[in-house]
Amino acid sequence: MGKDSFYGVPKVLIQLAEAMNTEVVDWRLAIPPAYGEGYCKGYVFNEHIRMLVLDYKLNEELVLTNPDKDTLGRMILFKFRNMLPVDGNAMSKTTSELPSVLIATSRIDSDQLIPVHSNRASINIEVDASYLQSLFRFSEPSPILQSLIDNTQPLLFDQLLHASIQKVVDEMFVSSIREPFTLFYLRIKTEELICRLLVELEKRDEEHIYDLNSKDIDSLYQAKESLLADLSDAPSIDSLALTAGMSASKLKRLFKQVFGKSIFSYYQDFRMQEAARLLRNEKIAVSEVGYRLGFTNLSHFTRVFKEHIGLNPKRYTKSKLE
Image (cartoon, rainbow, N blue to C red):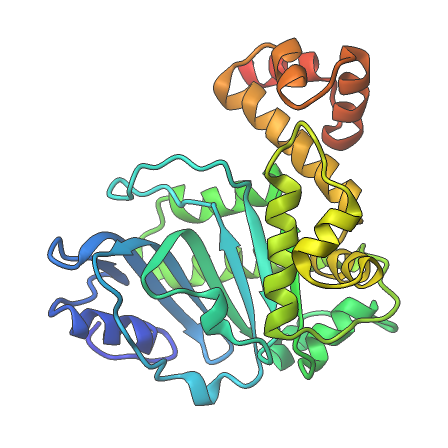
């Protein structure tokens, strides 16, 4: 695998290996200890779709020029975060971040979304917009899907991911598929992932899609960090707007476009996903989880949890033990 082809290894991965005086073996680059830790995997399925699986940290910043930068004008980026594939040599780590995916048109600077120095538990998929359009037919696509297909606006969408999509990712890397079928299998699962994401995006009810710039994106993520800094006490819209450096009306409009929910709905959804994580992984009592997340009334916590997760906390905990 010393060369890139439609059914091979992305050029950027080969370039990274050369910069570290090593090589890509079976689509995988192990970061040499002298340069850092972790690994990268890369697959070029065909001229329309490619994937990088990234879980690494470098000791020093490494400057690379994307060799495909001038040929990716129609590509849409799907960046999955906090979805560590099962790999015996993957770095062990904990994170309070929930699984999510960034979906960006080619008008957004991908270097802002894909840091070179560190990429933890992420999967980057690039798909040609025309190829994506050929995979489905809509008489009247939703404004969001139409904007992705057109790929002419600088747009970014951020979607929280639930168990059904995590299951697809796990299947991609747990299943034992013999080498002649590896790329074929991974391409099918990759397209399944994209299909499930488009189904979720199509549910959004945005009537008008606004262009984004780098300042808007930075401001929105600053507001998001402030929003989620304390899951037991939500900040006011005015304080978030001050943090973002934009009017409250603009913040509410762009936040809903990017994250798919109103500010308060997003806060509650994230809050309940964190509650589910605490019940599932930390095995914390239901009453304690509710208290940690700022609920003084257990019945209220139970009702909100069921609205977002589909089961009440006790039933959810029991289902995870069976």
